[in-house]
Image (cartoon, helix red, strand yellow):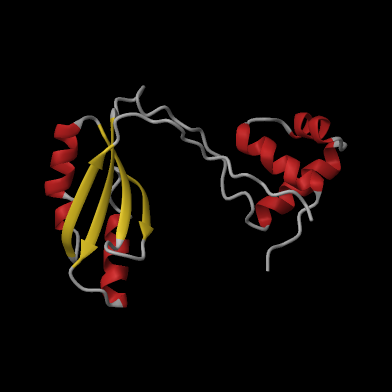
Amino acid sequence: MPVKLDMYERKILELLQSDASLSTAAIAEKVGLSPSPCWRRIDRLEKDGFIKCKVAIVDRHKVGLRAQIFAQIKLNAHGRANLDEFAAAIRNVPEVLECFVLMGNVDFLVRIVAEDIEAYERIFFQKLSQLPGVQEVNSTVALSEIKSTTQLPIPPAN
């Protein structure tokens, strides 16, 4: 059962999602709390796992990762051991940013970044196709990005 969040905690989460570098004093002012109770709420949100980590979001284009590819991966066997072995191996591929287990015709959806299509081809042949249990990989190249966010829509308090 989800933990109840009050309106202050919800606003704190919204603010931190948009700018994790805000000071506690700045957050307190924006949500209408004094710094001490605001700090206690942030500390609790971190300890309770609502805030997983605070990171800088890097522009992939500026660091030379111009290609973004979505790969649908099908395994040749579907036992729990096969899924676990694949999952452990895919975690070690640094170009893979996200990996999801799917229901349906394919087993996994993977988001990959690379310098360009030639770099992705090397990743495909040297890494993806060599992962344990891989039967088939269908790759789709993203031409442009319409929306990309890490901000979750925090539901209002009931």
